[in-house]
Image 1: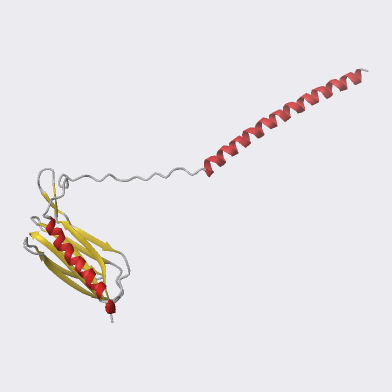
Image 2: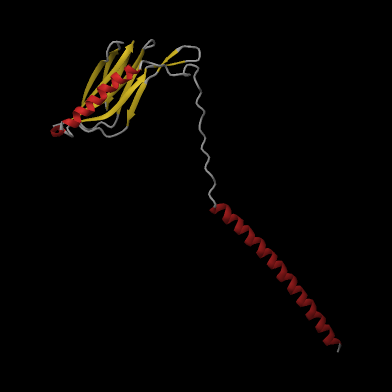
Length: 209
């Protein structure tokens, strides 16, 4: 009888130990599952990207845009519109002559808060394959002063001087021939320090025959 009682006590202690072990395993398993779930969530959820943009320092010389007679802009835009209209009317020549670029009349300077003038440089850089042919840059201005005009296609460059007049639209034409290997076209118009005018330009392309 003593043996039976001892055996029963041992069985009871063994069962209790097993339950403790099982409970501990369950707690550990739950902790592992929670950790995996949190890790998976953190990995699967994309974090918002942060884009840092450097603040542009505002120059004291770029506070305002000058006002010119409306006739100045209309006069330059008239030349640009006439070119587009003329090409549309020449149906038989369509495709052989094109106008890839037109820039409408824009002021040659800005006014600072202290009343000083800052020349407004017009610059365009196109990083594209340039088909073979002839490219003619025509810069227009009306007002007072002058501007340097630089035209580059690939390794070829031309320079000209655009002299402005308040009585009429003046022009400067620069022509560059290309063989189709150029991959960049640049226009830079730099008004002189005392230039007060409206400036625009266009590029004509004549396809190589």
